[in-house]
Image 1 (tube, rainbow, N blue to C red):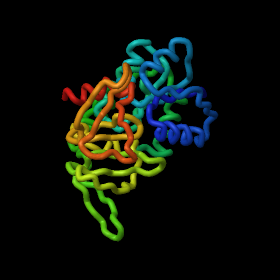
Image 2 (cartoon, rainbow, N blue to C red; image 1 turned 30 degrees about the vertical axis):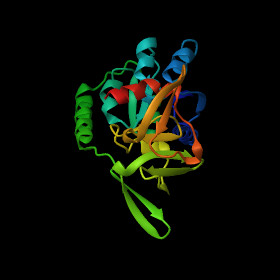
Image 3 (tube, helix red, strand yellow; image 1 turned 60 degrees about the vertical axis):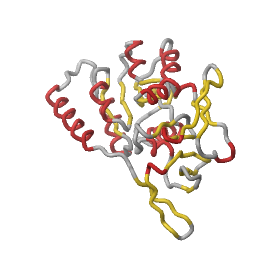
Image 4 (cartoon, one colour; image 1 turned 45 degrees about the horizontal axis):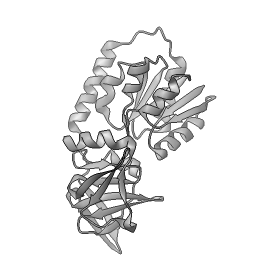
Length: 256
């Protein structure tokens, strides 16, 4: 079975690939695609048996790919944002994995694909029930507001309003406050992204998640990048840029 993974997060893509290859099915990862633009180009001349696709990509939503190319390949959507579920079923979706998912849930989705028949009729009563459940869970969803960190032998609980930015540093994740304090935080940037308020925080590239209130200035740096200056000193004196794949979403975030 040839599988294509559409995912802009290295850690998430690697984790999914590893899990797929550990399943009791003959699986070949044919290609990993990281953006809407890259996917549009690749699927013009290529195909596969099954697609695993995140929905929220750096340069847009993966729905754009399937709307533009009218792809009839079965799709299993993977995302932390369950509000996209309704739209996902307008396409050739056979399942929907809400992050974080485990081997049992993944195996069930792959099995559904193996047993899937193109002429199968969708059970709209079952789908309607499922969507009502999702709506209820979305209404109850709350973002993380406090973050437990350590300072020597002390444990500190940092309010999200005190946080200026997060930075991925090799395998570590660092939390920086508006006062310039630095702490190690036990999480990954990929996982953390989905726990934060989307009104307050934005992931500008694979390394940084910044708070809206921490932004001092923004300027065009090149045709494809924006340079961000924060109100607090940046660790290691890094220059911070909004990656090309994230610019449109970043501008929409600022407008909202």
